[in-house]
Amino acid sequence: MKIVLAVSLVLLMSGCGGADEGASLETPATGSNSAAGETITPQAAVTNTGTTVAADAGDVSDGGTIAVPTGFVASQCVFTAALATVDGSAISSRTAVNTTSGVVTCKSVVQGKLQPEEKSCVASYTIICAK
Image (cartoon, rainbow, N blue to C red; front, side):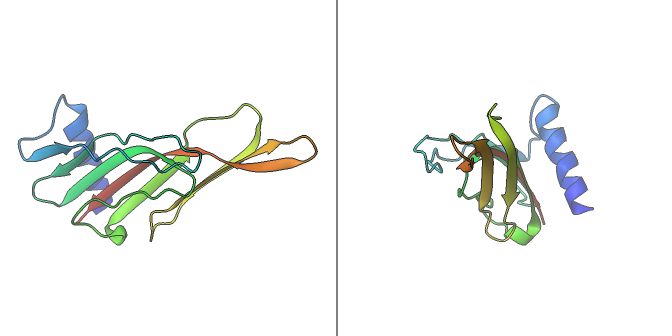
């Protein structure tokens, strides 16, 4: 029930032309989560001033960590991750989030010269937390 309420609140705050008076928009610092050296710029996070709901979305590379919003613990959050870019040569791909640590695994299998090879990829993520 809390997560459904959190999703509804986040959609309400972001989809109706602005946030409630009690909500603030925070922009996390730019960081580098990429093993390949590419810089990833997170999108803005939404947190209400009562600190009962927080949401964030962005991109993270394989092995990168989704930060749990300040004032929350991982057990109060729902994480999602999906392949952000599709490589045309990929045979398959897998994306997963460790819901305890927030570490993302994003791998694609591509056909190498002799045999398939596994390569790291970038995932889009969403985290929604509710108390």
